[in-house]
Length: 626
Image (cartoon, rainbow, N blue to C red; front, side, top):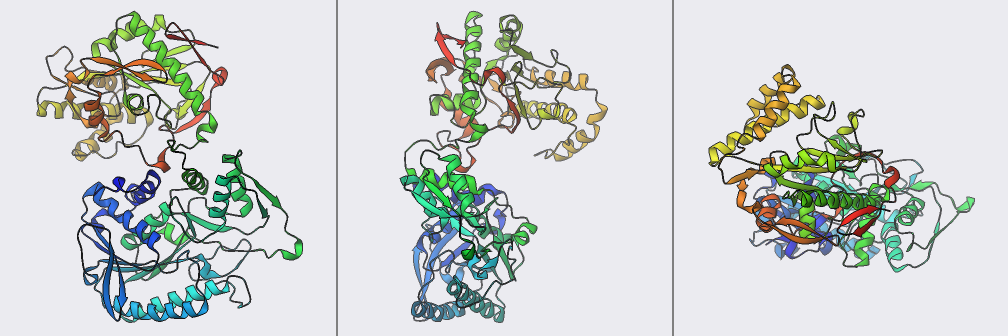
């Protein structure tokens, strides 16, 4: 069972969030049986899917099911995994309780607490690794302005104050939980969340949900300005925090958790929505009369869970954009429209101009080339740029790459700089970069080298021959990785990290890299790349690019080119693009998670200069600036 067969792209995004976070110990979850207790079916499903995502990614063998207590006996309910289990076999037990759920009336609440006592007594008899109770920030009551509540602090307990019922009820649940499990020496934790929101998660109504729904419907809503700030949290981070607490924190501790940059007043929520959906947002703000100002808030101090290493991933702005777009149900591919200060579309138009220019040069000189990497993927999957992509690449075989280098300088327009180690001092990239003069597009890495040309770039890469046999391919791959690492890390004055199957060799090379003169390191790198040049082998590898670690692939995949549509133009791709893209990406038709659809490069300095209004006009198959 694959989650993507059951969930839409928004649900799949948050279900896989714990797996992507790199905060969870997969070993502690392998083969685990997770028991869910509580009458919150939607939250239970979300928690279950987040555990089952490990089965998709790592064949972890996790089983998840719900249970309830009837007349003192366990009764299994919804089973989410294929393999059944008994409550007595549970490794982890999660009580969703009334976390971000509407508090019941007095009689219903008293009945729930009586049932909870029996449930906790039964849980205390289980031999599980950890029991987790989900609660939320309402337990602190109303707090003074600017006061963020820590785990063992309490707010107002005035029975006449707003929110007292929720505070009292949640405190009663937690008190029963801790007293019962402490007495029986059962390992437990409590996780108190901010107000939860997320695509497809019908939780208790609060300002984020209400304003998102009003924005989608373009309905007017009036808000009263207030200093009160609430802590919010995307379902992505809730699910990650649950697994993090169960597997990575000491027992018997209580933790607060909220999202990344997710403490806000209603006025700040309104501005987030207006800044991102100005054509739909119908929010008006009015001041609160002085006599009505309470200066109170529900605001969580999350220092403790962060101290143990938890870091939320989804900001309030990103989470609200995802929520609103999921509610719109337009069917369009999701993308953050505010990427690169709204300039991504213009960057892509400039890159398309680059492509047309390279196409012209290659046709004129009979040079075979193909769209490469994400540009190739975009051509096949989107018939153009991947919507969130900020670069473009082409690839050539070594003989065509060498020919391209010989002719490109005389063919390039005056505004394009050919960036190679021999054309610019201080540049040590192993491949050809074309850069536009009087622009700035510096990555986090190249931004450290401001004497180097940092204009908007386009990459041209060679795919080189590698060994005919597995052993020669492995040796060639290792030599290329080491020489490239020496050049790159010597250039950036950084450590060679990792090492994969050869950590000791990498550690030795890291210590001696400064003893190797850069000209010698460059020679060794280039010698490694071209080691099998002009030799009869049936395999290639991406020695210059990001896919070096993927190793060799059959040279016949790049024998023939076919033309496909890309942004309304025809460009060449390998005839065997399906095999090649599968080699690069696996199931390449599956898009990356919604919350990660930002651009692929960490651009820290950007100035489009005269190209801020760049447009293309097709004239005999090439582009002209307008």
